[in-house]
Length: 254
Image (cartoon, rainbow, N blue to C red; front, side, top):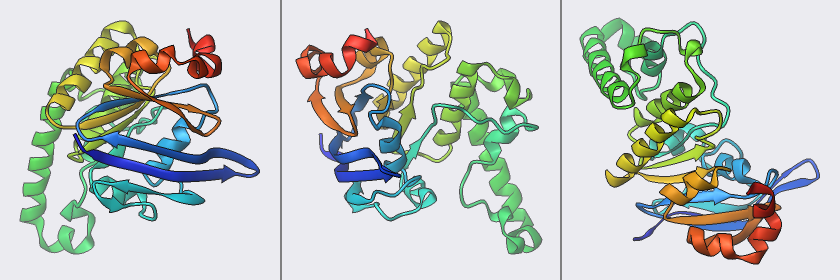
C-alpha cells in the first residue's frame, strides 16, 4: 500500500479556538480508515480542510501526490476526493432521481452556448447521466423510491442518497462524516456492505464515526483525535487498548 492522502502540521483557528492544532495524519491507498475522538476533537474540521471547505491557517494537504491545500472544493472533488456530511441536506421540491441528476460535473447544458447550439450533445449526455444515476440508485436500493420526494426519505435513505451523489463523481477517496448517525439497524447493515464492496473495487475511505462497532467491523486502521491533534494511530485493537485513548475518549464512548 502507498500513502494516498497526507495532512501535514495543519492548524485551523475559529476565533481564538484551535479546531486543529498541528495535526499530521496519513491515509493509505485502498484502506478504510477510521477517525475517532471526543466531541470537539476536530474531526469534522479535518474533513472540511481535506476537501477544501475550509482552508488551513498553517500546514499542507497532499492528495494522490499533489498539493491541494489552496484548491477550491470543486477542484478537489474533480480529482476524486469527495465527502458526505453528518447532517444531510436534501433538495426540497425534487425527487430522489432529480436531485441525483444535478450532481454530474461538466454538464454541457449548463452553459448558454451548449444549451443553444449543442442540443444533440446535451441530450446524449443527459441520457448517459440518467443511465448512470439509475444504476447507482439500483445498487444502493433506492431505485424503488426514485420518484419520491427526497425530503420524504428516512434518515438512512438520505445517507444512501448522499453516497449516491458522490458516486456520480467517480471518486477515488470518500470521506464519510458519521454515516451511522440516525440510521436504523437494517439500513446500517446495507451501508456497511456497500462500503466494503466499494472498497473492494478500489475506492479508499475515511470514516468519522462514534459507533465503535462499525469502526471495528470495517476499518483497516484508526486515527484518534483529541483537542485538534492526532493522539494515536494504529489498528482498532491497538488504539482502543491505549491508555491515552481510554482516558481521552473511550471512557465516554463505551
